[in-house]
Image (tube, rainbow, N blue to C red; front, side, top):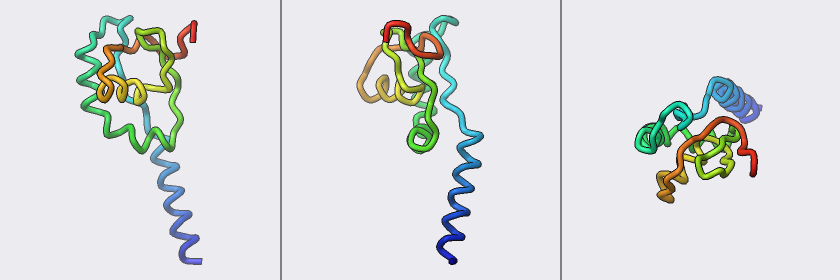
Length: 97
C-alpha cells in the first residue's frame, strides 16, 4: 500500500510538471534569426530536453533544410551533437516531408 501511494504521488508530480513544460523557444529564420542565435538558445536550454522529450510529445517543426523535426529538442540535438547548420523555419511540418 505504501509503495502504491508513493508511486501515485510521483506520477501526479510528473503530470503537473509536464502540463506546464514547454519546448525550447527557438527563434525562426522567417523572423530574422541566424544560426548563431539558434545555437546559443540550444546550448542554453538543451538540458531541459532530456526528460521532456520522453514525457511530453513535441509539436513538429520545419527546419531550413526542409526536413520535419519532432520538435525544438530534436533540432537542437542535431545542431549541437551532429553539427548540422539548420535553423527553425517555422512551427509545423514541412510541406514536402
